[in-house]
Image (cartoon, rainbow, N blue to C red; front, side, top):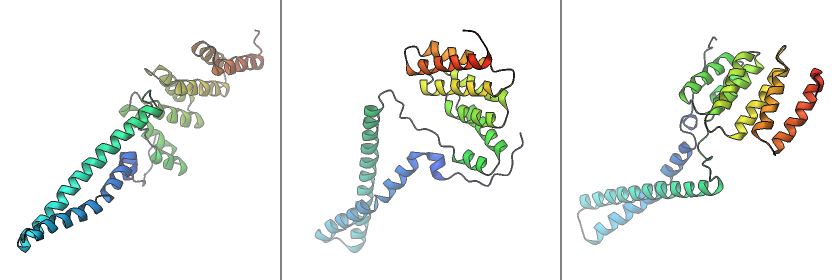
Length: 224
């Protein structure tokens, strides 16, 4: 694949994710403790009738002490609260940071599909256990008519250890769509639907897969 010239620059939010916003908010919140620390440090020095240089040094020291204390308090408290809240609403640990793909989306919007696919392939190598870059790349490969690679990536998602049911089901459904639009591979869709039924029995997923199986068999002229 050829890679076009990419003028998109990753922002601090692309590189750091949600931690970037937290960092900027924490830095901005330091203004008040720095000023308060300067007043308190300088005020204590004035009360003790210290010389102006000592008063200035006390003010600076007070600012540093309060800034360090505030930084530690905010970062430790907010992170701890975040972990507790995350554990409460997502006890399985599903609340981990999910990578953003603004760079690749921008490439696609500009028509640089090859560049986006190259970027996804690089991310796949960097994150061997992350299903999302595989899914996004597979979707893009499928839309581009590169069905073989799309199939490989959807299969790779299914084989990931501890893959989430959401991602596994999505990959299977997309494989069914892929095979139906792929001359000579339509019957492979039957296999995917049977896989969903066997993997998720007694669920709505299995119910919909059975209905899809009957419909696809009818389309392909296969007997029950």
